[in-house]
Length: 111
Length: 117
Image (cartoon, rainbow over all chains, first blue to last red; front, side, top):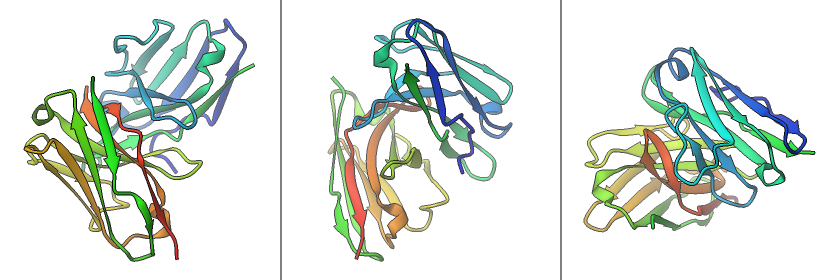
């Protein structure tokens, strides 16, 4: 059971806008930055969004992130077949001792 | 180019120990906190531990606290994870990651740890 809650799956047709949610609490998302990662099966995760809504160089501007209160979301506008992957949100949790936490992951299928 | 290369994984019996290593290159190792993240077969990512650049701050997931020890050697640009009291639940691909922008930004390819009798 992950501290951060993500839907297990999401889907869209090419060109559609897809959003993936990440729900937490005041001890994690509410008080810390959120990162998003993309993982193609069999490969290492790749940083997609950092500090809630910042894109590293090389990440297409089709990917965007946002945060409000204790929830965050990742949006992919104009989804492409190569976006089919697992997506994870992550942040720190300060409830008892400081620990990193990941969402359970969302598998994106491009139909 | 940032490179993180893990080693030390393998097959170990329940209750056994293993020491993972991560060789870092392509960046100023002494300027970054480092982390270990694992992924059980077919499962999601699980944060394991992090260590600050000077080893002053160390954090562990509850699931490994008291059994795993993270350390680093800045002279050797290396990160380590000493794992004791291993159980089947520790079977996973272990990633070494650089902590940039508060959380991992670059990841290695991982080293597989299998705990089985």
